[in-house]
Length: 161
Image (cartoon, rainbow, N blue to C red; front, side, top):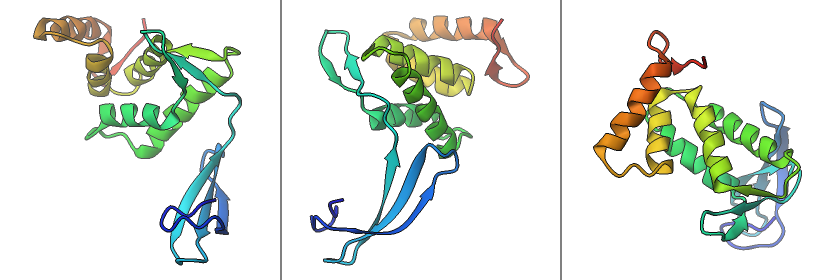
């Protein structure tokens, strides 16, 4: 593993342990050149996924981009980083185990929407406002009205009917 601080090609693993959900290995490393320490995570990748965008372009699946998108939606909400990590891992496993080498941005977006709908209404609306490309206040009001029809107001989560 290359040192992110000085670029040295040889780093030493000082400590390894599984993450709480056993989906990755956390490794604490040290660079013998500059003495810097850093952490890496090792995850199993079932297959290479290609994302097909709306315009037809193809790009490699980016787990970090998915995590950033969800993290933005849940920002300042009572949702832990660990919960976001579990959602991302679950979605990635779902995509990889689908048997398809390609996945569309629509499939990714809808899967995130489904996950957030069951987690937090505000995060769901935040993500939807970008994903569904709301152009006006009326678009947002119509979407919220649809959610309100499905929402159980006692626990502030969406209930599937």
